[in-house]
Structure formats: C-alpha cells, structure tokens
Image 1 (cartoon, rainbow, N blue to C red):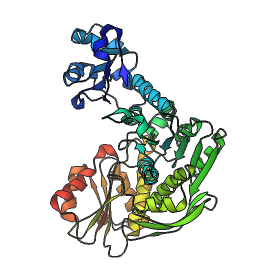
Image 2 (cartoon, helix red, strand yellow; image 1 turned 30 degrees about the vertical axis):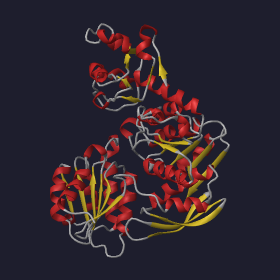
Image 3 (cartoon, rainbow, N blue to C red; image 1 turned 45 degrees about the vertical axis):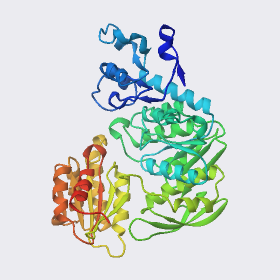
Image 4 (cartoon, helix red, strand yellow; image 1 turned 90 degrees about the vertical axis):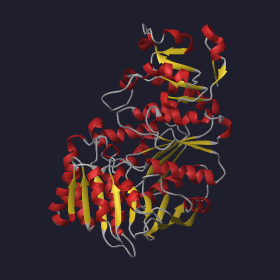
Length: 480
C-alpha cells in the first residue's frame, strides 16, 4: 500500500510495511496512528481516562515510522510537532481513519469474512473456526488474540498488509467482534461486513454500559443485520434470544442453527466428558455425521465447537473433515487451558475474562471432575461491568456453584464477596469458602493449599488479574 502527500512526495512515496498504535512498538516502515482522548471518547471505549499519543509522534518517527496519522485539532498550534508537519497525515478522527484503511483493504481483497460475536465463547469459537477452515487448506487470517474492539477489528484486518504479508495470500478472514457499548457491532460491520455471521449467545455482560439483557441482544443482532446480502447466519438454537435473530436474517442466503436441541441443524449427540480436558460427542449435520473427540471440556466448549462446525458447513466442509480438525484443536491461552503439574494436581486456567454464564459453565464442567479427581476447587474473581445487578448476579452464581457440589470456593476481590456469601447461603460450609481482597493474596494462599488430586478452576474478569494465581503456582511447582 502507498500513501502520498503533495507537500512531501519523497516522504510519502514509500511502501508501508505495517500499522501501529503504540509508539513504543513502532518498527521501521510502519504508519503510526496517534490516538487522542477525543478519538477514544467518540468511539466505544469504556475507560475514563486516556493518554494522548500525539506527544509520542516524534518518538515514533525517530524509530522509523514512515509517517503519523494525527488529529488535526490536536496538532494545530503545537510547536513541538511543527518540524514534523510534512510527515503528518491530518484527519478529524484517527480511529475512523484506521477503520477506513481497513475497510479499503477488505473491499480490495474481496474474499469471505466470518464475523463472530456473543456474550461468551467468542475467542474460542473464533480460534476453532479458523482452525477448522485452516485444516481444509484454506489460508486463514484470524483476529489477533481477542482483538475485538473498534481498534482491534481494524488492526486484525490490517495483518493482511503487515510484515510482508499481502491480501492475496489469504482465502478467508475469521474476525472476533466484541461489544461493550451500544452500536459497536454495527461499526465493526462497517469495517468488515461479514459473509458469515456467527452468534454464540446472549448473557448479562457489560450491563453497566448496555443497561439490559434486551439491549445486549439488540446490539449483538447487529451482526446479522450488518451481514452481506446472501450471506449465512449461524445461530445458537439453544439460546432463545439468538434463535430469534432469524427474524433479522431476511437478507440472508442461508440460516444454519446449532446446539444440543433437536431443532438444530448442527447437533451434538451423546455428549460425555473424557477425563479432564476432553469431550466426546457425535456430530450431526445436514450433510452427514461423524464422531468427535474434542480436546476441551464442558458443555460450553461443545457449543463453541458446534458454532465452528456451522461456520465450516457454510463453506461446504463435511462432517468428517470437521471432526478430524476439531480433534487437533487446542484451548485458547487462558481460556480453559488444562495445566497438569508434577505434584499431581490440575489447574484449568480460564483467567482471561469472566461473566455469570461463562463462570457457571466452567464451574459445572470442573464439578464433573473425572477419574482420580479429589477436591474440586473454584477460584473465582469478581465479574466486572455488571452494573446495578452485579451484587445479585454474584450471589446467584455462588448459590449455583454450591449446587454443583464443588468442595472449595474462593472469591477474589470486590463483589466476589457476594459470590462466597451466596454459596454459604445455599449450604456450602464456611470452612470450604474464603474471600480474598486481591489476586496476590489468593495466589499466596493457593500455593500452600493445593495438594495431589486437586482440580482447580481459576477464573475472573480481566481487571482482577486472577492469572496471578496461575503464575504463582507455575513458579512454585513444575508442569508435567
């Protein structure tokens, strides 16, 4: 891709090797996007304070950036930036400029986009979908990690033109599309309109910003509404709100439903747990059936695999190919990773994020245990962004976890105290429950608490940093 400016053609008549929003990580040949607080506030970002990257433009250019995209109003009258004027591309909105570059890349590329959203399971479904499609020989671009906000979707697209990559080297893009504010999914669809729209579920997450579960459902439905005409909607038949989105898919060429219910087009039959970290089921699709051994445990991961199967089906992939690919999949980092320690205990690291639905799904999976499991332990961090319903949702989750029959429940930080109280109110003995003010305190206790045979789930919202519990266990004990 080339960028030119009449004032300094010799500067801008250069090939751009990549795109960056972090001045500390800028590499030679990249185009630097200087984000400002005003840009963040105009888009769907929930933080209350932001750094202004315009003051880092000199650093980015010194590190080899070809040029910087900057907000015109932020540059005006800035004497520090005056010497760099001929290397600045001035715009009204830097995030929108990044998105326009990404949209231009998608349009010029012209190949299928799979968009995936939902209240839980997005990242795992994205990785499974990319894995299955890649296993069939399709050259697949996938979102980086869980890059799913207004910056992340654009940056994921622009991987096509980074580090020497070219759009023609990819056959399909699988993009995770997140939502924390109203209208965010619609904006993602303007950047990368999906040919295949995958909806995992609707649950009470980000209530602080969305207001109600109904508003969350309406926001998620924008993925179906923003899908290209003639595209395919892949909908969770087991989730009433998602299943109802069929009514918004009148422009779709095809609707594929998935789930455990008999009405689903793509089903899992005879689901069973195979030890810790694996599930077995029979995959049934309109095009055939196959036995699947999925190296992930829990009903929620079976549903994630079915969503990926539905997406693959829209590309004409058969049941046998899907089953073979799923057998070689692996959990995403910190999203259900099974860590086995030489000392004889096992940790399920699901510490990347949490909400009531995902916590209960993982806790139920761990409560099933397996042969040789002793104590089943749940270390659950506070679930953030639940708004006024936060305390009640934590208490209800605690009551349900107590009903699963786990031996130990620890709550970490803030409203996780309500989680513990809910479990106690449901009959879990006080000696089996503890509350910690921080993940550091929980980590210190965990390294002394674990013993052979334990199966430990570690989960919490990103801001609680429950991964520190896992890190502490890794520092003290050896992995197998």
